[in-house]
Image (cartoon, rainbow, N blue to C red; front, top):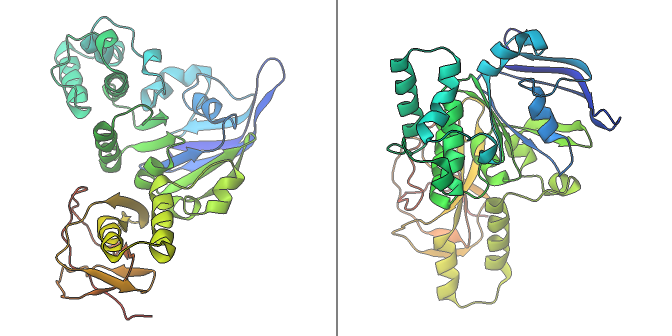
Length: 348
């Protein structure tokens, strides 16, 4: 228990009318781990999240946060460790100004004025809302309110962050900023989401909750690449993977002139990046500037960038190429333009 951020042991939860929502679920999440919680509507995901900081208590079984049992006597300490960012920011924002909303948590911790002001400034800067201190949340866009709700949680510096549909109604730029922040964060993160692309980019592990129990618990790269498994639980492949599949098939079978074939092949690439010690993979679909032409027939499904960054002159011999990066290598990436030299294996 002491070496876990979240430990759930055979937890059940039923509503007063007898409806059983969770049926003996168990899991353990390590400090600093990033986990996606996915599943169909009505699976019990929101109920599970509510158990983690004592908003609801299990009917039976046990939940521990950083070794502390989630019981009434511990709720103040538990809620300082677990921050939940709700899907609807209006469930969290109720003060007259953004400053007051973000300061609410630190104020209740009894922190001195200078520390509160520092935390508010840091939290607002983190979510890109610096200068919004005197703005009213009622006058902000939905995406801005989502970020303000996150700031209101970050300000009391919990060790564990639980997100309910974090990317809902976010514009693309702020969604990308959120993803980058989540990737860089050293906090324990649980993402409850139907946006499987954000799960693929951020999380190394995936829990599939359906009909009140965990049906799958494994690496995100395995679960989120498994079309049959996802469809069994009324989910779809992440859009990036679906786009990759569709374009690969189009390039192989579609009737088009060579100019359009080359445009599609050079415009879209699926890149697999390895991150962290566990070798988490995710896929980006984005534009590349290349100095070479794509005149292809077929090659192996994957090829690797030289981990030492060596440059090689070559011509591609496939219509569409999936790249893999050595998981021990750290890459700095521009998501709009990427000039790269590629190292290829032998042709099929």
